[in-house]
Image (cartoon, rainbow, N blue to C red; front, side):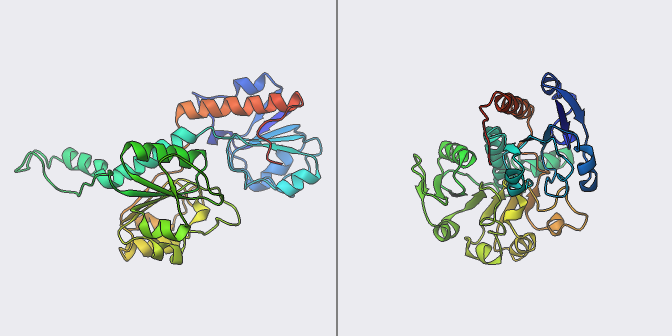
Length: 315
């Protein structure tokens, strides 16, 4: 059985490798295939494992032996599900492997916005504390989270984990989800109410036809003046130009984002120089423990598929 990894370098390194996969068959690792290279490289594969590689009718057209696509990811918008159904190719994702990691990173971004730790560290490293007249120089604003309202858009496993952390900070938590859910200490509201009442809006919904560009000029205009917009979901849920405009006009007090529509970031990305915008390079999901867990899930998915009891199958 031939297993081909199309973008191995997006997950694997010297700490997390493909040893477990090699026990299941012949493994061929490609660091990061270009779109036009994929079809030829997976032509004789029985199994393809990918993270963000686009697998559509063009890249899959030569893979006549392909029975299974495994994802190093929860989202699967890069896979042509209809094509896979038509050609009897099972597609399995990695479920909730990154819940705690993304929730943790969400609050790392929120805390950075309100505590300015990086700026204060630079203030000290630049020798300015040594020259300060007071022991506590009030150079950058600080603000407590307690009592603030956090609006969560998308109340799946990650959204719920974020809500628990917010409760620990004694925040008011409200949420919008396509289907209402009963979660302790979380009040379900309409999207419009969430936008108007939240001091922080944090996005945790999947990218699909309904959520694409959900956060745009009109949406940002409905948010409370001075609010913080946080996106650790997918870059496609927001219109970057509209977010830039909302920040430049100071209608929004800030943004903290981990994902963009095009990744890696384009040279002319409009958000690069936006006011009060914290950007991390899509690493919310990537702690070591998380990637080890991810590999274990991917391996178990393959084993279960081969045993006739597929898990995390999305088609």
